[in-house]
Image (cartoon, rainbow, N blue to C red; front, side, top):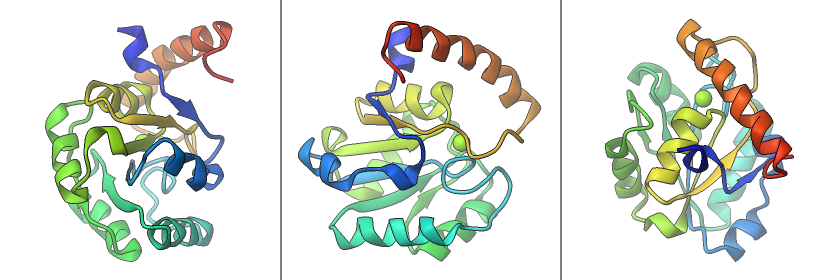
Length: 168
Ligand SMILES: [Mg+2]
């Protein structure tokens, strides 16, 4: 169980993602989580640097999509602004929404990365699908009460991973 929560790698922010490194490990498609990964929770204001990053990904030939448990109108607004396809109300870590995302990207699991801030949804779901999982710390500390409860557990797991030297 615990190993399924462990990301393949981590970045301090999505702005620190290394496109060349991703290419080196064979990645052609990237699935981004929305809340607290691309934008702050429940805020639909995109940081201009994030817009530039997504444009860079596209220019380098990567396929991009957004996979979020949030409601359609919010996910759609950001997806439209970035001009990328999306899956909303995803119920991650279920496998089905990840399969839908792979269909949108038209990439194989082994050539697809998932980037997200939650071990119990983004990383667990990505690992179950055998994607390349990248964890980025949440952009803000505001979120659902239910998410906050899971976060407590998540902190314990992160602490354990850090102790083992798996995470920085
Ligand atoms: Mg999130």
